[in-house]
Length: 95
Image (tube, rainbow, N blue to C red; front, side, top):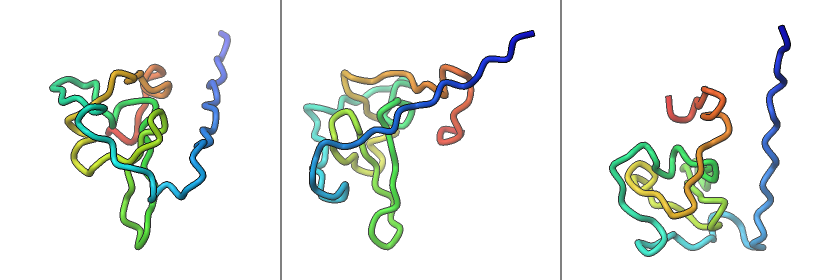
């Protein structure tokens, strides 16, 4: 039986020069309300970082913008893509 090696995800390097905390917040034009599992939190481009005083900062690497807390659970953009780890059957950040 062949064992498949996991495919490594490339490290995304933001093209913006400023710190992540200084990125602009994504607006209603970019983020669309949804009632499906296709929300920011389940997207391949979603990341969270420890910000100032360890307050979580939610980001979209595709749009290089910040996501307001709570919006990551109820919104998505047109660029939503299934996360590679979800395609392989494991997503600890959604558990």
